[in-house]
Image (cartoon, rainbow, N blue to C red):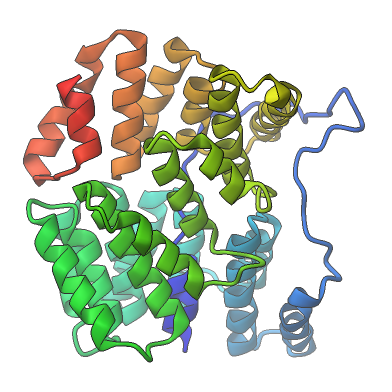
Length: 394
């Protein structure tokens, strides 16, 4: 079902930054900037079969869409940006006003992955102008609105999904958006009831629902939050757990002051830069607590991250602003540089994680006035989050 394939692509979001034109070449040939799974790996067999079918029928839209969707899923699962490029290239021939709606939806997903949110919304608006009940476009637009800190707009799109997507997808979309408003406890109770009512729902649906349940519980400070994260992990593949879920659970452990547990969680899955960042943050905290044996490992990971961010900027890529700001603040300990990066990130995306980051940077930089826009926005949307409240109280 195409909605489920796209659903998987919606779980992982990233941000972006500055560019430098000159190509980057590492000074040390031994330096590892990114670990990628070999193209010949067995888990890619279905993807390459889909590509072969697409190439055997140039101009066949359905085969191109099938390959693009599979490439997006593989790319986010393995944290490998090459596959997003493959998906984009597969659809390059369809341009202009007559672009098929399904192509526009996938292009919106790719733009969302780059955090080019306005480009994503432009494509989605065109789709929904032509077909207001397009379920994938509604779901994708709801997610973009949520990421940008507009839960009321997201809820309106979720409501249109009623009768056009499965009950669990509608419930998760609704709870995910409503959980960022003034009644998160009601959203959590509603979602919990829907999860219980859907024991046989597809794994992709249950994974998303259980992840959202854990995140709402975390914001509420509920005792069940960790149990919910663990239940979500048990639904997923132990070999390659969902990157969004893995990082969300690691952030929970770090917030709880448990860097050793976060390191244990991530150590086998730190090929992606987002996971490596959190692993390095955990190691820095452990070193600060006196574990000097970890110092060489921490320094190696810190250098890898520094070189990766530098390479991304020199290539002209848009490095993830949230991760860049977290690196400056929580790895380098440079609050002066981290604060403007966190402010720039928050101007684009306003999830709780982005809000926490800006508050942490403002506190560390000794500039509490930088949090004033956050306070105004929190009052507007009615977001309740015990973690954010702790920062405001500080």
